[in-house]
Image 1 (cartoon, rainbow, N blue to C red):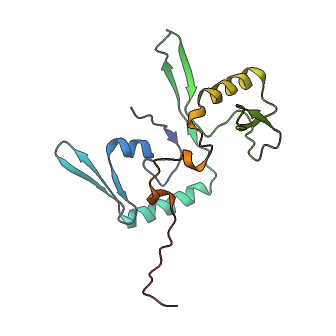
Image 2 (image 1 turned 180 degrees about the vertical axis):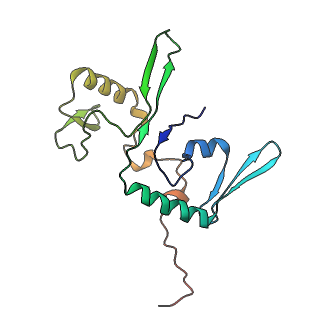
Image 3 (image 1 turned 45 degrees about the vertical axis):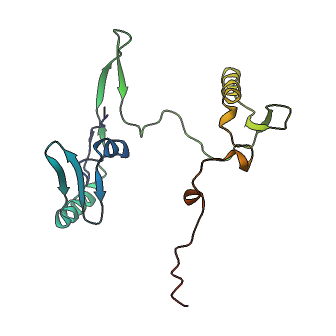
Length: 172
């Protein structure tokens, strides 16, 4: 099932399709050709863009954006399957209630896992219910961590090795 966000604002796009829906449709896109192909019941479907129209829409969008149009989002009432109470959720993921701070977390504590000097680092300022839950989760999933290079088995060398794309027949 695909979820859509409906936004009432001027845009150069008719629709923005994410990776999940493109994968679900098994669509193949070509930005260079302004085309998308996908499977249908009657063969291969194709959506083609037009460079002239795209340029015209983009220029119109720039004119409208200069007027500082504020987007309006739609509120959708969802019915919770486990209860009969209806809840309203804002579908705009861009609006965040709290200020998001990113950066390096300096206050880390060492969490000793076992006697073999396996150590994980977690944040010092974690509240106790979250800290206990995180420690329990990490300890129950120790087999996922690669503690040594020999633990990283099954990785194809074509993926993990970097090769420069250089034509050796051309001299500088």
